[in-house]
Length: 245
Ligand SMILES: [Zn+2]
Image (cartoon, rainbow, N blue to C red; front, side):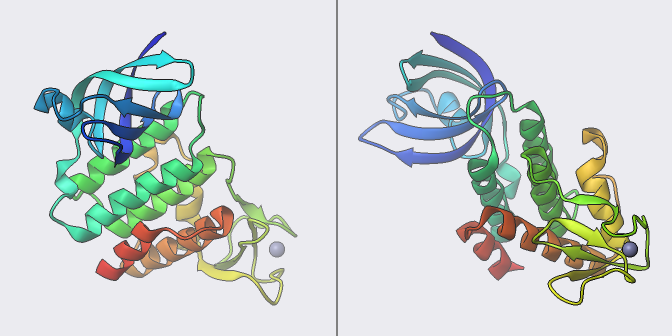
């Protein structure tokens, strides 16, 4: 059987003299692992198409559970992140998150679009890295079943308050009058509004918001705390990113 689809290479590993095993976020089949046979002998054009952060059109041969890429036509390679340690490590972190959270075997159109748009903006320096990081973390979690309840205060339903309190463990918000005395994070209304925008807006609007530098720092911190609590693991690339910023 043969599958023709486009996808983003999110991990690569050398497996022998000439073969590589890559992990691809595909549009039609979610995350798959596939061999690239004789990767060193195929044309350099196909080689860049199967390297990390390459977004390409693939022809994939499927035999039992083994997938093999035998043709790859590059569409975009996100070279713009190279040469900048913070942006490179952030791109690696996005790849690690996709490996961790994206489904296998099902349509991943929206996750792929989010990844491509985020990498494009990262590559072209279109938005602050903290903003891209928070958007990617919270939107990916929302698309994979971990959207927090941001509609209003869990107890009284109040939609806006000057400061609100986020209960990470139960993924819910409180107003200042109802907040439990412990285990919550205080957020400004600006940060709550940004979180709502990231999780709930239409895909094409998800990047369109502005926040002060202090607001972005707070947004990035709370998004990361929430992500680490949901996925319960460490990310080397995240630690690397933080060492450069
Ligand atoms: Zn309340």
